[in-house]
Structure formats: C-alpha cells, structure tokens
Image (cartoon, rainbow, N blue to C red; front, side, top):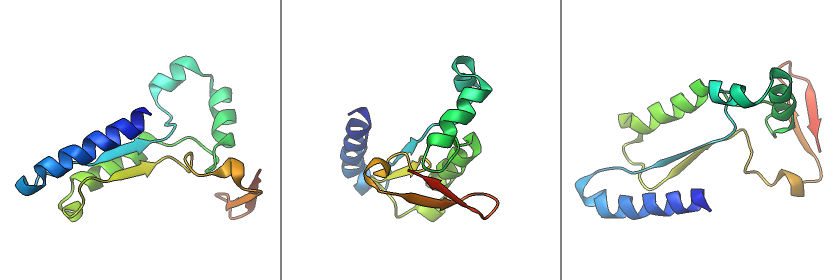
Length: 113
C-alpha cells in the first residue's frame, strides 16, 4: 500500500507542478545488496534468497544509481508522474506462471518454477 500511496502522491505533485515544468517521478528498487542488509543477513542467506528472485540475484546499488541518474538527466525531460521499477522482476506475476526460463550469465538456461 505504501508504494501505491507514494505513486499517487507523486502523480498529484506532478499534476500540480507540471505547468512550472517541475518533474516528479518515483523509483521502486527491489531487494538491493547493501551494507544495511548485511547487518541482518549472512552472505549465505543473501545468496540463497537472491537466487529465489526472478532475476536470480539481489540488485546492486549502482544499478539503482543509474536509474536515478537517468531520472535527473535532461534526456528524461519528457517524463513526469512516472515510476521506474528496478527490481529484478520482483513485481512480475512469477507465482502465477507455470514456468519461467531466463538465461543465466554463462548463457545457459536457468529454470525457476
């Protein structure tokens, strides 16, 4: 619910500020490998849980940073009231899918049910 509330607040702010050409967008990061996570989870647990995600690993802080840089870049000037998901597929309906196949980093097929 909190993500939906933040998205709605951003859309409302974008609507109010659009005539001043002030852009308002949101970022939804997935499970990111950060020092904060490492305070609560062991390396083994992070690897185990990361492997259960649709993309097969936790995200990296620099992947989120690249999305934020894009949102601040003049190249995204026409973007307002939008959300960017950088979540490795967490919000995909994976549970409802019969079978999801994604290539792993070595080019082999990795199956996740």
